[in-house]
Amino acid sequence: MPSIHKHKVKAFLSRTVLSLLPVARNRHGKCNNCGACCKLAFQCQFQGIRPNGESYCKIHKVRPFNCRKYPQKESHHVTQETCGYWFEKDSD
Image (cartoon, rainbow, N blue to C red; front, side, top):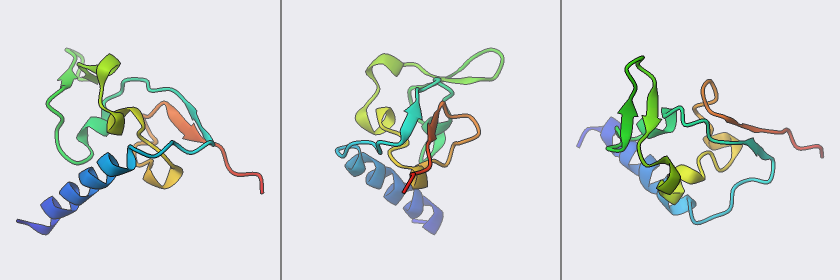
């Protein structure tokens, strides 16, 4: 198995296990159904493409927890350009 594939599998499994934990309190916003997180590890079978080329989730209302809770914390937020969520800086 190529190392890039192993990394994607490990990242996917990590997000699935972490989906059992709560999201960070400083996460704000809401999912805008951009579909960017559908392509993180593998091309999701429920990702659709609109005629204009935009991605969307075909099962958005019943999507799994690892999708619902993405991104759980700022360090996991690799789709900042398109994602509807953002993280407020801690005021320590």
